[in-house]
Image 1 (spheres, helix red, strand yellow):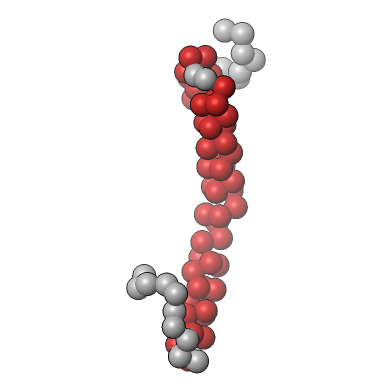
Image 2: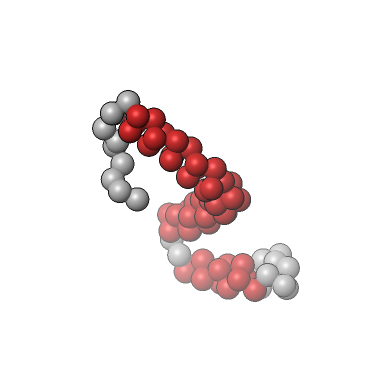
Length: 74
């Protein structure tokens, strides 16, 4: 293997092996997918409870002022 991968990172090694047969566009698509997954896990998931609280408050404001909610039932 020509890649400089850590031996403990077996998933990255398998992914690198699979990417040899992929087109450059498919490799870019996989890379972007991995970046989005990492960003989601690092930033969005820990803040879901904060988002739910803001969402509930927004829905209560809409109910109080009789504004039609754009969201369906949760």
